[in-house]
Length: 507
Image 1 (cartoon, helix red, strand yellow):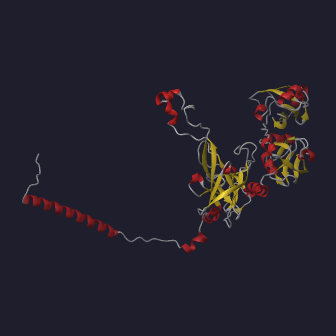
Image 2: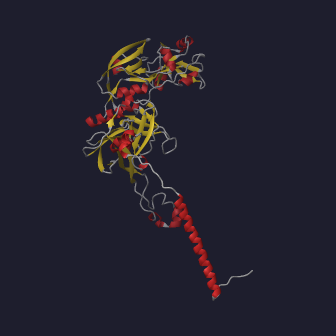
Image 3: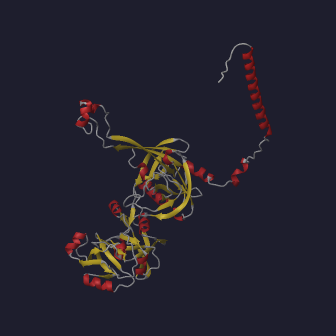
């Protein structure tokens, strides 16, 4: 195997000359090749838009967004949170544990710094400027417990804000900044919103900055979701426009840029982000709350004095009404506005002042949005006929508001088989009645057992219920109850007293 050795003299010069010539040749070929490729390409001909003609022919929502975005703000809230963590020290757990001290000595408690039992927490939400004077609509949960509020506008200006008032039952709050001539949003009419309408959500999700998402209105009048806690007034607009943490309090607008809702909640099923199911408080409800907060600093709600429940298909059939829209009166409170007006248990409320009632929750929201002392006309269904009943509404106090979270639903079940098969009852005594929380003078029979596979169980009948009526016929003992059940055809309608309140159950 030979070796190449670079020596002295002519041989060395000859080798170098060959190498230099080769490099020059290669480089030259490379340059020539590149020049040939560049020279072979024709010039590019580009077509540019005429900016003067963009406006009239443009599609999309850019004009809407430009009008809305300046009125949507970011709200920074600061809270003092109780950590519940003890300060470190020799005589406090876990630092005082002998197991640790045998390794670290008696100075173990001084190794770790003191941990405060209070810490400052910061959060981000959104809000909507609704007046040039600086009033801003947002969610209660955005400002709840905040010791300091800062509002940042879309143009990066920042203002210190103060809380005007808040309402936990609707998750609406009003804050104000001291400024004038602010950009505002146009208020729409959420009662005219329809499923399939375009919807744009504007806010500051995850703190990334002002963001706009597009979707449609997926549903209206969503309620009984439990998103706002017990006793809340839920009447949500549902949308698939992306709503994420930080969007709370932001704007839901239609394709005309009108505010139709205040974004408030999502259903994420374990995820921290949007899954296409978001909810907004209708702007009509939010505006009603805002107006009262600004004028009086609190929210007053009207009271009818009934326990309503939904009209199921089975209940509608039993009462002879054509549809399952409306709210069935399960109980009328004594000395209430409803009682004074002559409303009775078993009446079905079809509309209020000409506005259709769809279910018990909607009726509750309609009445609560009115002012105490308001006179309303109720169209009701009684004895297979419609009639109108004037009622002067009372006032719902805070205790009543928190105790009336449920709608008293009776989940009816049409069963062509034997009526109340699998149900055992006994005569009701005054002692048993007191134990069940019903008035001692109540007449009826008490349910002692319900077969879990029976139609009655599926309809919602429970052990401990007191059956007072069967198909609108009072029953005072087991004998009368059995006779009424035998006479039942095409299902059975029960008036049940549960924990002192009556409701209808259709089996």
